[in-house]
Length: 567
Image (tube, rainbow, N blue to C red):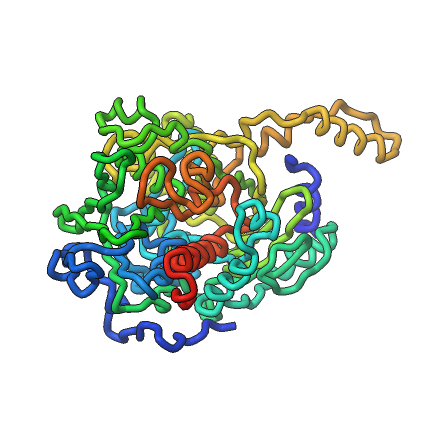
């Protein structure tokens, strides 16, 4: 009953199969190889001679495509392009396959809490004072997220200008390999029943589709609680044409500026030993560098390479290749607010399985039971920490890395895991407020400065007040009436906002890239990731990010080869 009341209040008051085996022709998985695939190796193994087998034009060190970032979109993109062309993937992190914090559902919170240099997640704090994380591992965000899999709605696909037929072919390509139907926990069943009782209808059963009502979505966790990430989509690759380098941190994209338009010639990257290398693009027509470093990494890399706001580049003495004031602009993060439902007894762990998709642009989910893993780290300050309210006493502008670390050090012996219970989560689908990203320095390893401006756009208080007033008048009794404080719910949302890790923007279509994701004003450079989105697709974006990698890969192959592409 308490759960139903919580859900009713939340909805009323908020602002407006098991994975298939590798198909024929895929790279076989090596039992004893910690990198799983033979085409994955450390960045320090790179040399001109070692890449000769990938040559397509007689130049040993050149590739048809260089993908910067082996993430949620980058892995399916590279696997697809390798069917016909030589591809080099440069991933700054390691592999997920032997990382227990990535691989097991029970360790979900540990992966986010780990702030070590080798962690699969890189923490950052926006200037709004909200903790966040970006992936630093092959497979990207699919390695550190809550695993929920749900497609975008048809309206999103239409707004993106995508071919609906190819979209419908690309989603199953992902799903056959890594997506599963979850076994509902008791809490997820209770959420399902409660959502239906408070009116989030109809019940749509188990489906990948984005439809209004209550549904059970897919998950990238199998029935044993093991995570399957976008890195496993590399099983589709042609191993003779793909090379993936891990711990390869790209420093900048290299341009030839001698012509009328800047033209990409390759990239410079640093290996795990600190040595620098240059990877070259083939001179063949159609060869490209493709940025797939996410909504933080892609605008950051463009600016470090000389594409961005002129004043900002000059401030850091970065040679201007192309002035574009829109790089890093239009950043947005979907606000999330939560309600903690405590329990005196331990509750079975579960991540997102059930979702309520309301018609007013609010999505309701739940996460339960974290904090009981024997391997737990006791210093997490996200939504799973009972020390949240203490840390929030530090003013937002003072929550810098140094202050954060000092706080952690002072309190590390006082902290205990968060709770026995559940969080009810809501995601606002279409945030109006927009922010920006700017460089702090020229070190690509450091996070840029990011502002999302949560809840900064003024809401229509007149309508909110009218709704509350009507609610008061509709309930007839003899009790004295009080003036409604229409600010209370808005202030609650502002005070308790956290991220749901669905941030996007920074390289928007029409401003930084064209509809086919080519960077405006330069040749041989694309951006294919969430930085090109002006909204987050569906309840959770990972399904569409992986689909996008496959979709764009097929589009590029068909553009270059036509019917000979074979995809």
